Length: 101
Image (tube, rainbow, N blue to C red; front, side, top):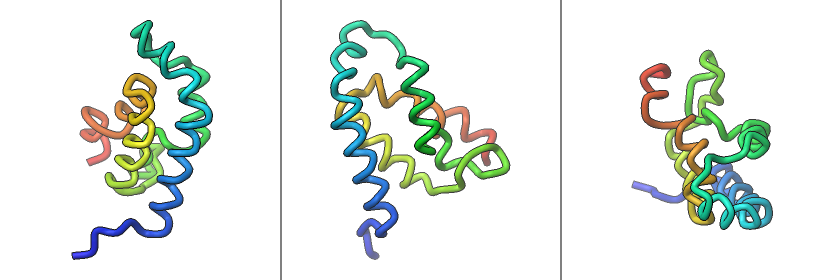
């Protein structure tokens, strides 16, 4: 079995990592210290990048990507801030999967 990421998955990972390091790091401490949810502007940014519901079927507003694709994005964001990664988690896993499957 081949466990290597595809070229598309590597690009997804690299883009999420770059975003997390450049745009998320400045917000991370504040989010973690205040224990507040991510700002709406950050959630809108995730949506514009296609990371909300990335693994949900297109007919439900998702992108039809795999669960692995969603985990790749989630992992890169959570490395910087679990609090900032939570909106991606919420939109890709948990109860939302009952809708998509």
